[in-house]
Length: 514
Ligand SMILES: O=C(O)C[C@H](O)C(=O)O
Ligand code: SF4
View 1 (cartoon, rainbow, N blue to C red):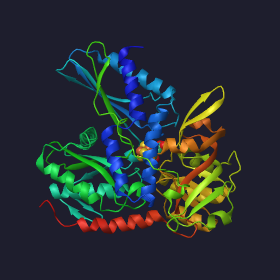
View 2: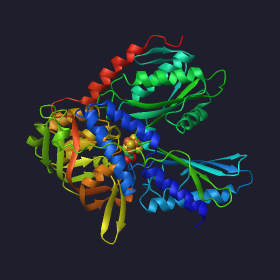
View 3: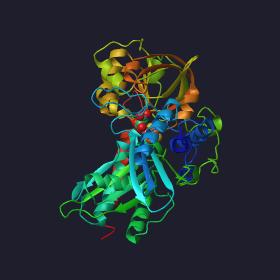
View 4: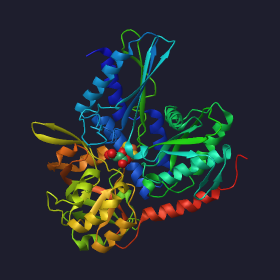
């Protein structure tokens, strides 16, 4: 293997497993701001613990290792064809080693290529510069937060905020709205990159470029520096909080860039990144391609100040504030009817993973295993196989709302009693929970190492033809903690937080940057 490929491989491993110092500081500061007894505080403690576990295990911080996107700067004359080939080889190797999830799926057939290589994946951009070194930057942005990106075309009318015109104040409204519409589904607290101007394509590119800025830098354009500070302050007054659980911290960073536009177009493009903000870069010697330096300060020197993140620990769960219920699957109707929004459930026993492909399949097929009283976990894990069998390398929840068209019917058809995921579900599922007697449990998004450790045994797998993330894994868990956010009595924390944050958003209707 060439030195270039080895250096890129090291970059991928570092990016996937060790959050850089600026991101860690932002998460640690958020944790300081939240009362550790609240749902948000508990989740931030879990996130902090997960960050340290990922570093220690040299395993993915989040199971969704995203769309690997490389930005490469080369001296004039460097052979970009060879570099591209070697980047692809490094990606395939990191996938084989369980540092990246198999994330490249044929859009028409659903087939997973198994090595993260395929048309359009990974994304590699080259740029020449008049320096001797090579710089390779990488961002691993997951699908859940990518789904919460949003592009506005000004002028427009925004829910809660009214008319947004073609000026700085209209831009201000779009950005606040972007944070509001993401709720907790992009694993808040998040970071946003904003692109003002350009066309539909370059607007998003500009937004993503902003994500490469350091969390603590200051925008060189004074109006934009003011806008960034304003957004950071006001977005944190929306009350969405970590994972959409409500709370004081919703946004950890806001970076805004501007490009020219066509007279007829005025786009504001927002790239939403989850707290698992994985980006790093290396500066390579121009001739040997050895790593000379890292672009972002490494995370290892920034401890995450962990107190116990275990929800079953009494110190983290003051008596009278939160009820904790230990349950063993399969669950009875009585088990789940006693649960209320806000309860912490510590689950033991068997659960089955299922996401998009499985839900679609189960609508008109039987299940290969008995799901009566069962627990479905919206999760696409990172798995590795050796002589002893399959091992879970990372296994946090995925965004549940994608299963909204199916979930209610599947609950009734198979007698499911608990659905675990993140970000919450809608009215159809809520009605099925009430009618059938089932609950929705919100796990902490991105906490892939934390949950992987709860998995004692991989009992089996079905539908491997769907690919590793979409297969139905049968897992034996012990001490799997999640919060009831939708109960069998018609209550939904997600609906409440959304309603409350919509009212708060309306406070920012009046012009600020007139
Ligand atoms: O694909 C996943 O595992 C998670 C995804 O990034 C999500 O946030 O829903
Ligand atoms: S699960 Fe959450 S933390 Fe992981 S990539 Fe998706 S949005 Fe990010």
